[in-house]
Length: 141
Image 1: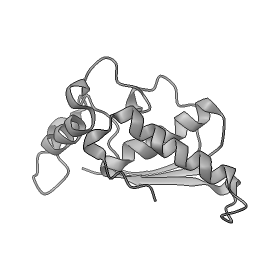
Image 2: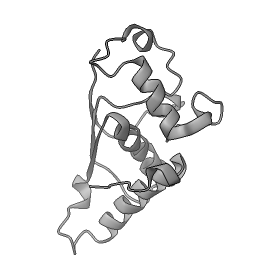
Image 3: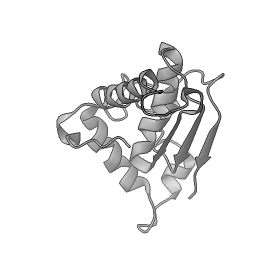
Image 4: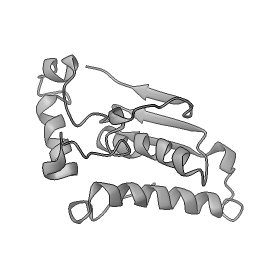
């Protein structure tokens, strides 16, 4: 499990690099920690969902290690909040539009909804996700 204790001090790219570095180290030391690198998976939920969703294409693009599967539970994918569902979900008991906007502002600051947001940070911005590993993605409104 990766815990980010200095969330406020770090920028989005630094946090993705942390996740990547831990995963790379795990695969490099697979025999020592009794890990089958062919079965390495990533799981994440809600706010951490962008880490899990961003780690898969980052690992794919760099080619240093592979992931076998990703499980994303109600992940935050889109900092732009332009979908129909992002406008319709207003119930305060659910992860609604206001909570999502707040989450992205906490994560990206003034860059939220900006032009330079990386697809590793906001996965919906990726031009092509063809060939990525299998994923279970739980969503709901």
